Length: 274
Length: 269
Image (tube, rainbow over all chains, first blue to last red; front, side):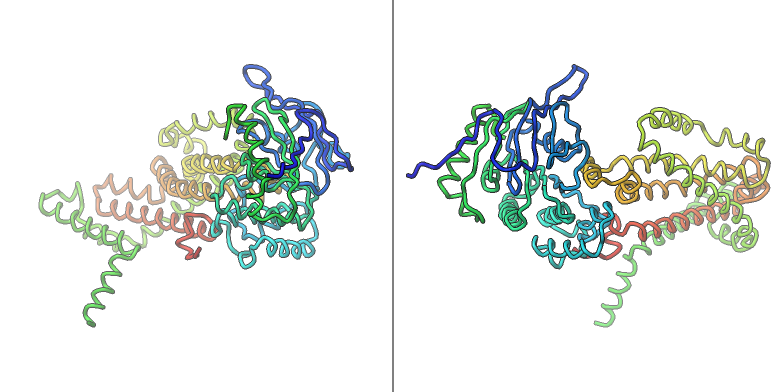
């Protein structure tokens, strides 16, 4: 069997990758103040995200990966260090980001199309132009024919597609996803993975996605960042040298199998599998 | 064949949603009438339903005229409840400080029996419409606040994060997310409020008024005119039902998307 070309980019230490990074995370920490004093949630973390990259952060529950994503989105202040997007320090939500949560967070009183157009309304962008874009996204995500339906008339997977359209409608460079398929059943989840992979490939968006599914991480990512338990830190980073566009068949590829095995070993060592 | 389908139609009619409560009421009325006759209950204790109907027919113009001030006081009190209740709920839901100051006080004030302080309003505002409106307002106000606070507070945290990630202003967040989200809870509160406002108006009329259904009630008890009293009670109940129904219709128009309204509106998945 051919030796899979695993490339460990650097273990729990600073890495700088070639090319101008789109997002720079520099020594970012997070501590929460509780009654028992300051509780560290994230140890200093440093990494870059390249433009057009699909970065997946995988870690056990409560390792602070969601906290990290919220700080990237500008929804939580950092306790130390800095986050920069295209050189600008993030202190508030950045215009060039779209975000998808685990729950679809669609407004029940708005049709699918009006939900997708919500960011355009709130940001007061020209409606006509973005409506056209919304229709294109609807088509791309397979929601055609459901534009006038209400969220409760849609399946969980379709609601999440609508949430994805909404995150992309204002054409941000960066897409942040916090366990977007965590609430879906296994089969829908696989299909959504294939579609997300395709959509990212077609649009060239930079994606930072958080999951605790190892196969999902390897399937989607250009690079997988493994986080350790609380207080969270980067345990390892792996490049995924699988060609795109990927199909489900990739999961039988020796590289895929070897990578998932290696990543799983991190959690086994930590005594955590979930 | 023909016969069977006709009896089927009759059965369907008997089972339809609006016939059922009427059917139950008819049964209760018959039971009432039978018990009065069987046990020989004297008319000055419980009148026969037939006498109540007669009294209602005889006194209809007067009853109708007297229900106008009650109706006005109810609507006035209810309008004040909404006008003050919802903004106060917004403040309470929007700020921990306001909540800490105002909410306990509100609960405390709610525990004071309104009937006991109603005479005070007569002393302050005289015998006109004002004390009745205030009594209706005091009873109707609390359910609006409680339900609206609950509605505003139950917005999902991720939903708020989403609004923030789009840099929505406070007004936009309120208008596009919080308010529509709170509407089902607010309507639930309005329904309780309107029925309590009727009670409040009558309480106001009890303690100091020379008009209104409450006044008729008190007068007829004093004169042992029980049929008239029961007729007035019936009218009062009808008023409550109609007002409740109006809110129900408004709710159906305002929140057709809500789970409680879907079947009525006839949406299909």
